[in-house]
Length: 470
Image (cartoon, rainbow, N blue to C red; front, side):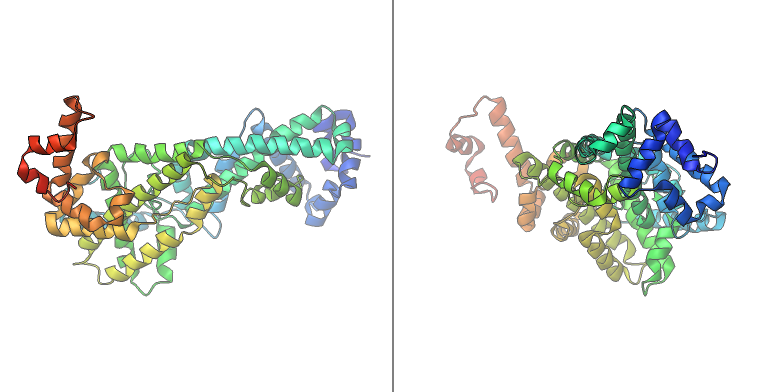
């Protein structure tokens, strides 16, 4: 067999040495004939294309060597997916138009909140630039789970090769381990990149999910996604643009003012990720269905429910905390943006309702996150949260609304959202503060087992009639 006439053999020789012919025969027996596939695609008619493909495969295998996840491949796939359908470079005029929208948004926000704007220059990015800026955060949040999936996938593939394909394992010999070691990092790198690229297709900025994806509080807009979103609406694009700039700028103000908030969100997601368990039976079934010879098909199989249900109390509590915090963020942003846009954007109500539905139903961005972590980022109580913030601002002013974010202990809980009117009342009357002070005094005084009646006597008879004391 002439290696010059069969270029796939050159790659097989690099991988398997003297066993290359036997490896090819076994692959053909399994229905995978690289030479036939190349001929069907027309690559054999172009030696340059064939050499390019072989070079890509060599690079892919070398990149995965020693890694649990091929992060370079994740980056390259994300860039490729983000560019699907076109991703033109942001021109100076488009950038200026969007920066002007941010300037207007910041001016309008100044009228409804005392939270300061970011001092960092706004960014206007192509989808590819968004990928470059946010992928490091993706790696931190989703990396541990991706590595766990990769290790589990490697184990399943090893069992498959050693079980059903014992003949192939015997032919490949010591090289089988090297090939398998590259498959799972490659597949998981593709999976990570696909998810990030899908998000880049529709994200408007750095805070769409209510989760900050940039390392610093900076306003960022993606004109391609904004224009695509505006196309199907009966709203002028300039109104859509400034409305989305308002949402992005409001998120950034909140994350900057409540410096504890980004870290808390990320810690909750990381805690949830640490508790994820992989359903090995589901993963094995997905591998069998996909066939382990095609990394792209294996990558798609990872979206088919390979995470076990999260029934333990700690996971449920963490998920509830994430959903409540996201709802409070979304509700606050909705109230601030609605008040800021009302005098200037005629269709603010329609835009607000559209964004509520978008966040509630989810989309490719949320689906991508769910595929990576088995975690649906849904602010499920956002209507209650929005009503709470609106009532607090209407009765106590913007200062009362925004002051709640000064410390995490001041935020309403999921139980508070069940009866948000009562929480607003307690907040405005100061009963929450009085109760906290009394509890603190009791603990510092060593009276942890004290009779509540003694506390009432000590506080005075009028305190016992407070609406918060039952």
